[in-house]
Amino acid sequence: MTGNLQTKKLASGKEYYYMVLNFRSEDGKRKQKWISTGLEVRGNKRKAEAMLREELQKYKNDLYSSDRDILFSDYLQKWLEQQRSSVSQVTFEGYSLHIRHPVAWFGERHLSLGDLKVSHFEDFYNEMLTSGKVNPRTGETSGLSVRTVREYKFIINSALNKAVANEIIPSNPALNIRVTNKTKKQLARKINFFTTEEANDFLDYVYGENDVLADLICATLFFGLRRSEVIAIRIQSIDFQNHRLNIDHTIVKMLTLQEKDDTKTPDSNRSYPLTGEMEDFFRRVIEKKKENAAYFGDTYQENEYVFTWDDGRPFAPDFVYHHFTRLIKKYGRPGFTFHNLRHSTASILYEQGWHPKDIQEWLGHADFYTTMNIYTHLDKCHRAEKARALDEILHIPSMPGRSSANAADGANHNADKAANDR
Image 1 (cartoon, rainbow, N blue to C red):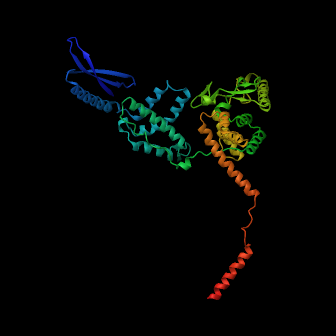
Image 2 (image 1 turned 180 degrees about the vertical axis):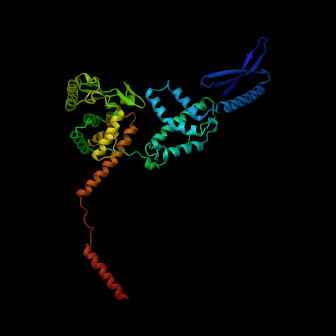
């Protein structure tokens, strides 16, 4: 709450000081309250200022003692509902998923906004990092990822900052807490990727298996697409006349499936040149769709997407994730994610001598830092591989000087000399 002094001239002609209090109501709207000091303007400025300070303190104490009695779990749910009209549906559903753990944890402890302390958030984050995940079948617990807990932290800080702005609490007790159970070195992003040779071997494998995602994986590797982008490629996205592939549509899922005519960032909205080989690839995929439509007849699900099930159903994002996880494990690279195909494209472009700025534009990274983080890691990995290759090619001879046999003779001579000396 803030306040200031204003003067008002009455019908009598005399001017009086009024205190104007500026505050926010519970719904966040700004309001004002005018209170008469009863003091004339002439000679009473200091008294009026003292009255204003006392009034502000009184209202401040009353406000903090009443509104902050709301349970933090209830306040989080109220904050979530306020976000519905100000964020996209996908973002709102992401908040809805990530708010569940904080609501449950703080709700069980019946902590109000006024009760919150730094230690509460330290305990919450530590518990999430060590035992926040529960196996529904066995009941065993394990830690959530640092990334997930940081999502919780973002929501908590956003809600508490809102409470500070609305003058419900004087400060955010969770503001300066770090969320990590690892050292900075351990947190350094590890980039997993295929080399060009490995990528070709993997493509041979998925096509040899006649895998349902084979064509989708091929396009992902060639263009370095995100999962939300590759499953959303539409027939009209392929401009055969101008030899271009346009990435301007995505399919994502949090709680519900969302189709959007935009990409993750404005820089992700991009267009690729199509080589003759890739044009032939897309023509074959589209022709296969026509053959499937004829085979399935009335049961075929007509849609605009290029990569689908044989009966025309589009691939769901979570199916691609889970199916690829099983596929890559069977291939022998467990832990390699679908997103690592995108890193593999960066690796292949690196091997071809592409400049980081060109890689950034090809992958549609919003900022150069993201590209350089990947590029730097690739550079280290490739240098290590080249060093190992040198190790296999160059055979280091024995150290110059005496041979091992001469060295043994020398050692015996020294032992005999020492015995004679004794």
